[in-house]
Structure formats: structure tokens, C-alpha cells
Amino acid sequence: MNNDVESLLREGMERFTSDLRAPAGLVRHATQRRRRRLALRSVAGSAAVLGAGAVALVAVVVPGVAENPAVASASVVKRIDKALSAAEPGEIARVTVTTRAATGPGAAIKTTTAEEWSYGDQWRSVSYSSAGHLVYDEGSSTSSVYTLVSYPTRTWARQRDLGRPAGLAQPNKPVVGGNPVRNRTVHPGGRILGPHGCEPTGGAVRLLLQPGLPGIGFSASAPPTTAAKALRTAISCGTFAVAGRDRVDGNEAIELTSRPGGLFTETIWVRPVTDLPIRVVVHSAPGQPAFRMTADISWLAPTSQNLAKLTVPIPAGFRRVPLAEVIGLTVLHLQGPLPRPICLPADAGTTCQD
Amino acid sequence: MAADRSAAELEHFLAERADHLLRTAVLLTGSREAGEDLLQMAVERLLRRWRRFDGDPEGYLRRTLYNLATDGYRRAGRWRQKERLLRTGLQPTQDATGDVDLRDALVRLLLQLPVRQRAVLVLRYWEQLTDAETAAVLGCAEGTVKSAGSRGLARMRELADDWSDTAAMCGQWGNRS
Image 1 (spheres, each protein chain N blue to C red):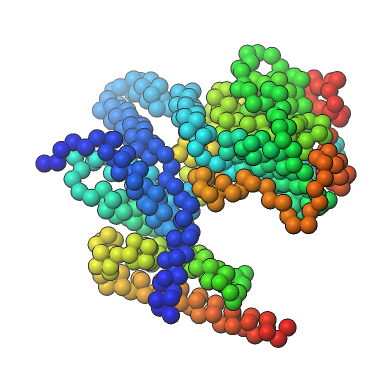
Image 2 (image 1 turned 90 degrees about the vertical axis):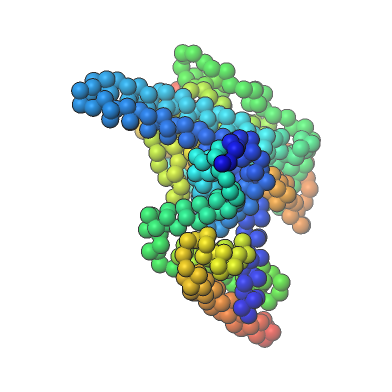
């Protein structure tokens, strides 16, 4: 039995760690962290040498080098941007999205979850109801074949070249001035539509959006872009500032928050080791419809096991029907769990509800 | 006198060995994130002395991983955490899947052992070092390694025995129906 336990333990350890790949840039990160530490030590050392007689000088030098929030934020944002740029082609982003939102004025708050994977042109999203039941599973393969499986109706459909929503795949262009929420429609489930730009709430939110069923008014089904690309856009728009250090699931993380004053507040937590975001939280400002979305992000190596997650499985016994029929049946079955978009100020004339 | 070593050499070394070291780090810490943090810290330490480093980088990194893991856990007070057996909710089966489940259960139990016991088991059964080599890595006496290892394995055996008993019981119930 001894040998059995020992060999089973070894096999278990082998299995537990089989798909692990070390993050890229270990040496680069170590070098950067060392430089930062040395710079801080140098500043602290200088301050000590200057002593009491040079208090005024210290007061100028220390904050200027080490504590200037703008400098710190710019440096962190630059590193995150670089890390996301490397992760975009190289790693599978897995995002678990939990959304708490009221389906209308005075309505009860519902919690829904979705699991999403994105890797290059491939993506998949599995949505669950507030009761935790699988509602639908959809995704797009490398050859742009879109598959949708509806669990309540036990049907599925497959269609080629549905396309991406116009503009969503384009990189954001900074918007200078103007009303940040003008012409913008926010779906209570989290989808934000509107002109592309670097408005507050415009970047990271789009990452978190569930692709949604095609044809129900707000999208041809496709995620806005890969998670890495969406986050990169949000980060590089310059709306985030370093708020401090925090712990996420017991691990050290850098916290960045969006500029205050918008209809939503976004917070992103980034792992200092990899400079990759691991959690994004978006919540509505006081006075706005209750809404909170939490996205937990993992960055996975493209092993065969992880790549398999990008494929939408067709359960045995499900009936193949035209795509429009799956969508129609699912929406009917759900009786409105995908609520109509709600209006934000300056949305007059759009299809959202008041 | 060692010659100066370049960062490229370190990168080359890590390209080959970082995956294995990460796996060790994950086994020591229990999660990918914490394992990556641990490995990053170890690489930073190696980098500090890399230019004049004259030795086995893998051995150095491995020792650093174990030292950082035990230190970190001591500082965080996690070593005081009460050990919890993971029997609850684990349902053994009689077929090959049962073996797989038991392997997973053993690893989950491993991750809940005190860090010193866990480090010994990882070094002994993952790195396949001898007691003497394990003691050298951990910087402790061979006797300490033996006692920590035997305590850790005893917990594993308890779980495995319990598993076999329950599997047999489930089999009897299954045969009746």
C-alpha cells in the first residue's frame, strides 16, 4: 500500500500540474522590479543622508520620484499594456463573469453568470440562469463558424460568417471632450453600445460583455474582441489610475480605478508578477440602475486541454434547427431574462426602454 | 573567479526549466497564481547574483523556492492553519475513474498539509530526491525530513485506506441493487 500511495501521489502531482507553463518574461519582470526597488532605495538613501537640514529638499525629491501618482500610474499602465500585448496572441483568456442587475425600474436584482474563453479569432461563452442552469452555449471557431446550443429548448444551430458587429473590432480612438455617455445604450446585462472612444466606462466594460444571442437587437453574435485586446484598449485610454495595493484571492495585486464622475465605476486588479489583469469590477454610480459585474480572469497556456474549452459541444439528442429558430425559441423560453436595453441620458431616439 | 553571465543565458536556462520549476512552485503553494509569484521572487533573487553566479542555477532556484515557501507561510501564519481532511464530498468509484479521483484527493490533501511536510513530500516524490538530498535543500537534519515525510505519508495512507473501504462499501450497495 505504501508504494501505491506514493506512486498515486506522484501521478496526482503530475496531473495537477500538467498544463502549467511558466509566464513569459520572467527575467524582464525580475529586472524591472529590481530596478524599481533600487530606485526607491536610492531615493530613501539620499533622503537619509540629507538629514534634518534638508527636509525641504527631501519633500520635493521623494514625492517627485517615487510617489507621484501620475508617474506611477503611467508606468504601471505601460507595463500592463505590454503584458497584454504579449498575452493577446499567446494565451487563452478565461473570464468568469458574474452580473447582478435589476431587469427594470423597481425590479428584483438577478444574478447571472457566464464563462467565456477567447483566443485569437476563437471565442466561446456559456451562460447560466440566475438559478444556475445552463441556458446557452455559443462560440465561434477559427473558420468563423458560429455555433449556438440552447439548453432550455434542446436545439442547436450552426452558421458560417455571421460577422462581427461593425466597429467593435476596431481599435478605440481617443475622444477629447464631449459627453462621455452621449448616444450610448447600456444593456442591464452589461452590454454597452455606442460610439467608440476612450470614455470612462467604455473600455473594460466591453471586455466583460457576454456575447448575447444574435438577432435580438443589439448584436450579431461576436465578442467585441479578445479579452486581452479589450483590456488593452481600456487601459491605454488613460482613464485608470493606480489606487494602491490589494489582495485578490490571497494574492498581491495592484488596484487601478477609473476616473470618478461617470455612470459606472471600474476597478481593475493586476498581478504585479505578470502585469496581467486578474479581476475587473464594474458597478453603477449611486442613483443609476443597480448594476454590478465582476469578471475574474485567468490567462491559460494554449495546451490541447485548454484549447478544447473553445469548442462548443453539441449534446446528444439535441435537434438541429435554423439559427433564427434557436434564437426565437430561446428568447421565448427565457421570457425576458435578456432584458431590453435601458436608456442613459442622451439616448433619446434609440431602442432602449425608459 | 566566475565569468560574467549575461541575462540571455538566464533567459535561455529559464526557457528550458521554468515550466518544471513553476510546477514545483504550484505544488508548494497550492495555486498557479501563488506559484508564479513564488517563482518570480526566486528568479529575482537569482538575478541579483547572476552576473557572478557560479553554480547550478536550478539547484539555487529550487532551494530558494522551498525557503521562500516555508518562510512565506511562516510569516503569514498559515502554518498554524488546522489541517483539514478532504474526505467530505469525495465519492469513490470502483473503476479506473476511482484511481483518478484518489490521485486528485491525495494532491488536495497534500496542499493542506503543513508547509514543511508538504515540501518534504514534494521533494521526495515529485523531485524524487533522497532523504539526504531533501535535507540539504531544506537545510535541516535528515531525521527531520524522515519524520516530516512519514507524518505526511501517514495522512495520505489514512485517506487512501478510507477511500478503499468506502469504495468496497459502495460496491456492495451497487451489487445489491
